Image 1: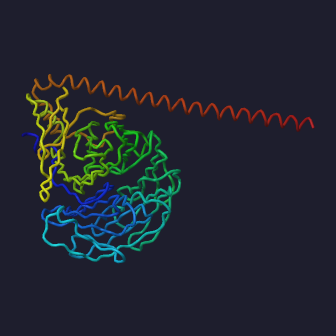
Image 2 (image 1 turned 180 degrees about the vertical axis):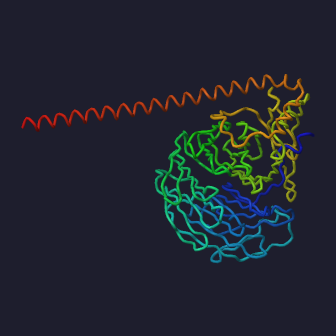
Image 3 (image 1 turned 135 degrees about the vertical axis):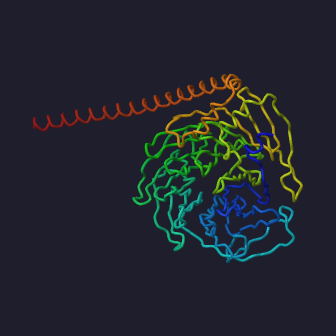
Length: 484
């Protein structure tokens, strides 16, 4: 099959949590994955087969966020118990550690892993207490020196890692702060809140540079593009938006999910974005083309966590079904236009429903449904989960096609020019459809822009009216004083 090397493939499948998975993250060494859950535990899963997984026990309530430090030597976790814990790995323990006070790391139930022995390992963690509400997120700066946390107490707090010292707080949000992230250079902070705004902060001046207010619902998640020049945010209004932080302009607007979008992750190349939604799907977006690439159906229920690995070769997802799925990316090694040409050239659709065993230790099967409409004529293909993901060319509302983050390479242009005339003729309907969708998207943007201008004009009129009234009052007072 020609698409084997191009589409995402399901590589591993882990089950050990006892409740909804809230967060996933890869270690920089690509040997472990950390996950947090509403079951109050943190799990460390080994990418290498035949290796055990370990459970961190220490938080007294749900774990909302986990992240490895850039070096991979520390794990930070945020919890509903209003604390942040910094876990220190023990040597020879597969880079996992535990709290020395009341806890230990316990191997996962043997029927969920492959291994003969069970061990209890002692470790240690540092406790940060400063928030007065649920801590929703924790994030390391790229140099590993500082942490930023966000909370239901409406604040964002910054800490030093090694001195374990609280530095300062950012306080302009008027509702729960769901997420806070450092920029790649560590000079900026982005935050997402239930007040329907995304705020950009200057770390040094501690001032809010700009508030992005285009979301129509709570903003669940926000993150920086690897270049540091753009940000993306996901919200309960089922949309994903991309802004340029230099001009504060909305670059792209995607409405491809049928449920709230819980989390997103940029591919390290900056060319792709993956999202996880309450509609149970993962969506992979091509930022250069401004279109939907893949729709992955793997989780039974809301998909609540997703993240690319540091190299982009893999991505992991978690959901309310208590499962962690690890996928091989594949698509980033082939130019998308080349893949599209091959898909359009297919004369016969392939269709089959498969159940693939992905948990060898339990002989369980998980059905991974994939949708593909890449030929532009509405065909639907179901591929084996170990051979394909799903690709969909239902183009989202692309607000601004430029500036693009990267331009096509000359080799890609030459490949496109060498495409057979027959394929070009067959793709005309798809081109027309995409053009119409693009026009509709721009009309939608114009409508929203006019609405915003009307609101601003109304405010201006009100202020002008108020100024005129005040001027009349002042004139009247002056006349009264002169008469007296």
